Amino acid sequence: MMTSCKKLSKKARYGAPENVLRNKLDLCSKHGDLKEALRLYHEAKLNGVSLSVHHYNSLLYLCSAWSCKDDAESKDLGIQEGFDIYREMDFKKVAPNEGTFTSAARLAAAKEDPVLAFDLVKQMKNSGIPPKLRSYGPALFGFCKKGMADEAYEVDAHMVESGVIAEEDELSALLRVSCGTQWDEKVYEMMHRLRASVRQVSEDTAAVVEDWFRSDAAAGVGIEKWNVEKVKEVVLKGGGGWHGQGWLGKGEWEVVRTEMGETGVCHSCGERLVSIDIDPIETEKFAKSLTELASKREAKNTFLHFQEWLKRNGPFDAVVDGANVSLLNSQEFSFLQLKSVVNELHQISKSKKLPLVILHTSRVTGGPALHPRNKKLLESWRRAGALYATPLGSCDDWYWLYAAVSSNCLLVTNDEMRDHIFQLLGNGFIPRWKEKHQIRMTASREEGVKLRMPPPYSIVIQESEEGNWHVPTVTGDDLETPRQWVCARRRRRNQPLHTLF
Image (cartoon, rainbow, N blue to C red; front, side):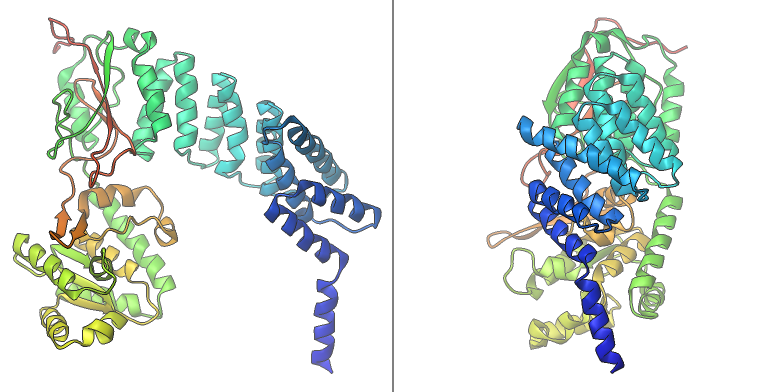
């Protein structure tokens, strides 16, 4: 009887007008149907249905989406109805959340009112709701579009104060407005923020960079005499690749698209790029955070067991993501391909130690692993302490990444480390680490597996001691197609641009 009552109660809740409306509005959001959502909204009001923040947010989301449409009728409908709904929500004293404020800010941006969009973000923060990066976009991009540089910088400062980190789109917009207002100090600041957080820039950002260096404003700023030794000292202290001392030199810039040679020498200016150091303390902190996350997500003590095994058998010169290597351009799991990579790494190892192969336990106990030749191969690696089989239910990504980071060694994988597992660890350390440690591969029937060693230079915006700039773009991958770089340097003069004092 009790179970029957619970079922009836659950069915009644599901069939309640509020829940029916919620489900219908969710469908409207899914299909982008604002007109049907508005019909349901007005019908619900007439019938006295109580609306929650979820109902209002669904409506505001649709209105903000329509406010960005190209046709004037849809755009006006989205803006008008959106603000009416927002006011109605306020009148009914329904507490807003981050989604509410962000949708309202987008509506403000759609009617080209970035001041209102920013006011909404301030209200959000004053209400105790932490703004997100998306919350700031309407105000920041709105101010930048209008060329309102001071206001855009104010939004940027508010983001910093709130602990919200700008990404490429935001920094590119700030760079563009700084160039437009010829505020060279801000241009310089944004270049370095791009260097620190974005590393390789999109084509849109690269175009902004090129426009700046080709401008009269860029030619007119900079110091002609600087302390060479001080600049060298600052470069060394910062790990290489930048100095942060301001624009060096004066006069027109020569701006070209170019490529880097295998050793990091620019094909245009002949300057050699550097490999930028990673702080060992930062590496240690990353290994610790990786351990904490893996321990929470792996079965009890399985990751701890692996760490203890690694202490007994490591460190290694290289770690191999066994599954990634074995399945590269192959329909089947290829132990032959894996063996080839292991042997090559063994040959180039300074210690002549076998690399550590990480494989899921299913790969070493079934399928091709049962073939006598492969069984013998696996057993030889196991005896040498060069094979670790991750347990059932585990994610082997945690294991090969931790092994490589903790051993401070090379890692063989074509995994770009971009999925949700790696996002949990943040996007600051991994791109820099894999640039110095990841060996990538190509495979073909004619040539077999070819290893691509990490470049001897960092693929990141670099500012040289001479004041030259090299900006890597996302065009090209350095495997099949050479990466495109923007090279900017002052045009040559007969006499030197700087002196030592």
